[in-house]
Image 1: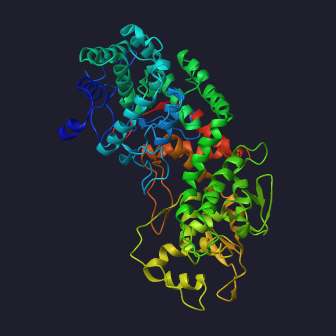
Image 2: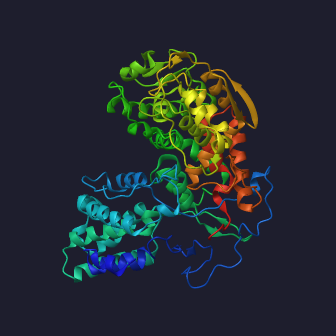
Image 3: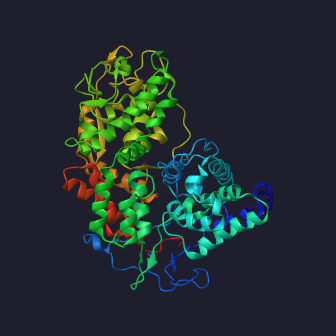
Length: 582
């Protein structure tokens, strides 16, 4: 952090000292290694993790025990996890009682162009100088907005109240008990502020700022403690937070905290039971709505400009919500809760606002599709309209969406190109077939046919039988599960994906990415290129976990919740190796 930035922060010297000595080891980097209850998260027991380096830790380079069919040999690669903006808001509401006028406006977006999920712990999501500035604005507004007497009910008693109240408030804020050293340092800040002439309430509010600017609030450790065999096991408090934020995007509830206090979370059966319980909480639907929105790019339709006047901002918002709500309605259904239902449902979730697109009947919050060719996710207007342009379809955008989001394929670097100019008398397919020649053909012969299979849906997702005065004839050849399939209608494409092992594995990969906050090392198919070989231990570890999740989903009839429950109950969720960069 620069000297200029430090000097620009208009906060008391004592608080600044606390933040930069206790809280941050630096900007644009991961936090330092913390110590909790005498255990350093580097795996070394003792009062300080920084005195000597941990020795003998098992790394991905020296782990030779992996046997993929035996999931007890699976190990994860974990890290510090910064809370996403949504997770910070949810945590503040849970810990501080939904205070008013908290300023989140300076938060930097969690999702860059290269990322899918806001949980991603890529370099762009570390606490940079600009992101930290936003946190200072947030912390100041939070400290002003809290009801101070609820947090420190005995504030009139001064220091003794601060110390006793901080033990409770600090544990809730940091999702684990405070050490005596941490409690002493926080209380010392209050003492120094009082010495500097601050009133007791003002000093208490500034201590709250320190709590939420700490790396212990902004980040979650998933590093664990070193076991006798050199592997690392996440602590009970780490597991409670990891499970809770992955499931409901907020702090652990009373049952999880109780299990963590009793050190009863570190086994697969308990984690599976708790994951299942949490998924039954009302908050889980909201959390997994976030997952669906990010995975399926549901908000992309909000920026879709169309020539039709009926395609208003209100309609766009409802179409975005439709994609998210449909996923949640399916995942949490008592009966229709399977992966193939996402692709094959003959209805969606919505109201009459989109009747000019769908033309179907609406009852009980669901729209019954009018055409038999319209199925599931690929029949939803939110996807079809966002993967198009203002006045025509775009088979490339639709194909890329299917390949990247539903099949987890990557792409070789594309040469510079331009969108084909609309020509009178030529259908969209004819235009794009002309465009996909020469150097473009190696990729587009795989991409475009996925999009051509959906040409029955126009630029807003309305069904059509003809384009440019000619009848639309679907005749696509797509590669799914390594086999070329002839597709003659949109619903045939949906059906092929619904029964694809590659698509099922992709759902497992997306669950992996969202839950663990990183891309997998396991190779993905590359359109127009050659995928990397899974030769490294890192790629093998991730591949085994993903295959285990996909197999469990398939064995359970495609049940969508199974992917998450299987992932967090896999030993690789609680047992880790030191990976690249550790």
